[in-house]
Length: 312
Image (cartoon, rainbow, N blue to C red; front, side, top):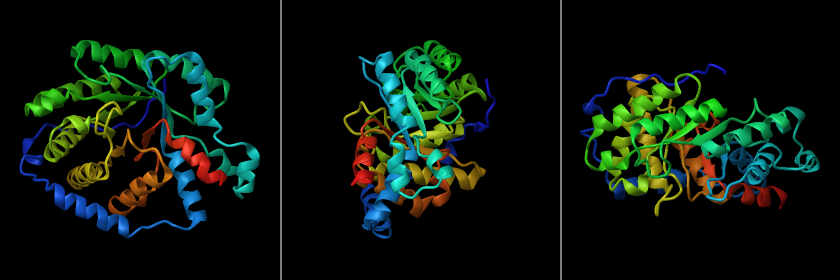
């Protein structure tokens, strides 16, 4: 297994977040102002943004009826989203065409071997990481020991990214130290064999302040990414929530120098929605964050709209 660079945990400290106050109306106003600065209307620019969104997408299947066949189909779409002639018509050079694939594929741990086999056969195993949702997805309501075993199993099967889900109950009760300890155990289980993306389940955290605090705790515990949602909650990725998480990332970077990634998941289905998210990142964290190692979309339906836009 390859050794990779991962985030280093820092000691738990409540003063990092306990004084923070989040005003929802202010956050919503800030989102509107930030998006107004970066309106994209030119069709050629929209196509360029659509291709960019594709390269930032974790193409996902998390259905109860997933099989080897549909995971194989997922990997084929991830690796070769467009026929050669379409890329040629876009005027892309060979080096750029090689990069037109998704950032990763995301599956359940039991489907990781299927994804690995397919990507190997396609010659894309080194280009497209395999992410596995683990730790009692989507609820997180399982004993810690079984959640850690799930991480170990996914990595042993070939996953190089683990999307853990936090126990929202700990956050809602204000048990931040316990939440930190759990995520830290998950970070240590991943070691330097897999990146760790911490799913906050923002639709079940109750308040924007809890979103900020959970973001900060996850980053202190060593998360490489903070992720909005499982996609199974009634409320998933929204731009105001995204801005709160971005502000936590900015504050953490100022304090530590560490750059943590953001992954909106659930609800991002169109190129228009993806452009809004990318514009928000550009206006806050900067273009540096618009790279797969620092920004991802978790999506199953976005690629379909990307295809429509690019082919139009």
